[in-house]
Length: 171
Figure 1 (cartoon, helix red, strand yellow):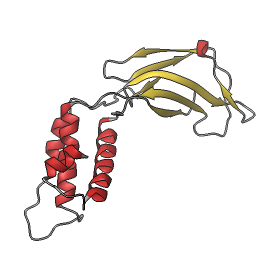
Figure 2 (tube, one colour; figure 1 turned 180 degrees about the horizontal axis):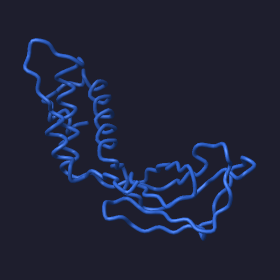
Figure 3 (tube, rainbow, N blue to C red; figure 1 turned 90 degrees about the vertical axis):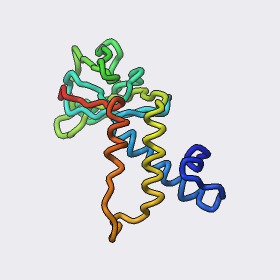
């Protein structure tokens, strides 16, 4: 909060609620854009429609917590860790491979759920991109500003974040 207020050149606490909301929104936008969690110790659930090798591309994935699935009767089960293995992908994601798996519930769109520990410390680029988004949204509080030349700050933000982004081309 103090870094954002310094970046915005705000000295009072009158705008703290607004700045906090903008910070939360900017962090969420950056994490979504990069397909990464920038808070160590978070978890993510990956939904699969069947037993198939999959790229867990939101991350970086540090560990698989558990794999749950719906059996043919629709009951939730936990898959034994011996029934899958993982390898690290070069982009920070993780690849998961299944073998000797049980039958799945037929009429469930996503009967397999992989829960994984995700997260990494944010880099200087990520911190600066978040501050740039907060500043842009703080100064332009409406969706459309009339009477001005449009300026797209997200291009600069996207440039800063391009090295952090996980793009999954495997699926």
